[in-house]
Length: 162
Image 1 (tube, helix red, strand yellow):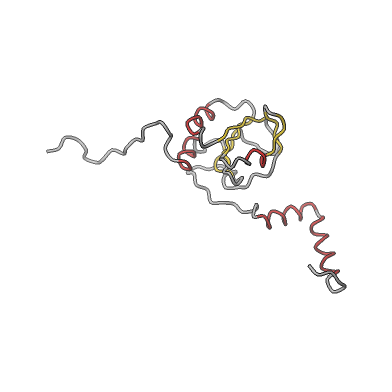
Image 2 (tube, one colour):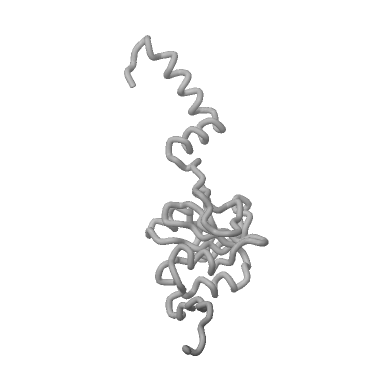
């Protein structure tokens, strides 16, 4: 951080690293922790799960919005892309007091039709073939579906008492 002839070479080297697009992205991700991949929590996860979602610009019904702006409320967020079938929206409606939902036009940076984001920007769940249902991920992160009775597991040998 000191200026002087003994640090000029180091400053020039560091400036070159930061100026290089590929390296500066790696360096900024490393410094911010955005290169960290969190452990997957769902049984059949997608490759998106546990990864930080970069600040992508999205076209929504309210105009252009970026991911950071959408997460500013500090709530988990369900992003639905394109004409995603209504099943994701129907599964999420019971958690609407906890999870915000935003529909956006498809974007090349996000190759799935739905993402559940944690408030810190990490992907909690992503749609995909063979993956867990959104409802399973919502229950994992936020507990049983509000307003729906919790099913108690059947006990072995349950029946009439003798």
